[in-house]
Amino acid sequence: MSIKQMPGRVLISLLLSVTGLLSGCASHNENASLLAKKQAQNISQNLPIKSAGYTLVLAQSSGTTVKMTIISEAGTQTTQTPDAFLISYQRQMCADPTVKLMLTEGINYSITINDTRTGNQYQRKLDRTTCGIVKA
Image 1: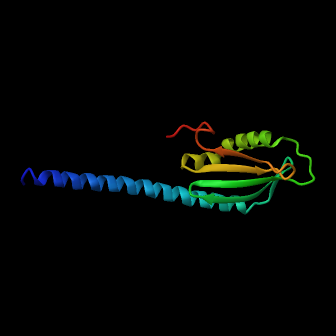
Image 2: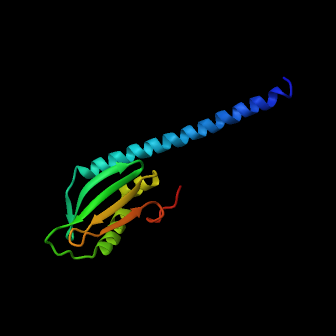
């Protein structure tokens, strides 16, 4: 083997290694996307869910994110402001073992409240950081 051939073989090996790593990343993202889709479907099966004058009406996935939409119940006095409700809801979700597992698998949550009384929209995103989960 000549010295001129050696760099080509090293380059090919390096390219194959990088391709393998990228395939692994794509596979992880595909798995996380499938988990997000399944989680959104599981939540959707139990809708609507009412709590404190708010109703969870929609759960859908977008990539690795589970998007949940909550509305304030029309004509009902809520016991918490939308921001207070989101903080409370975040605490509940971060304490839930299933949600914790999803977060460690790379799933994120986006929670939106549409306040039907004011027309305002409130949003909170949940990920490992917001729930205080250290990446393993």
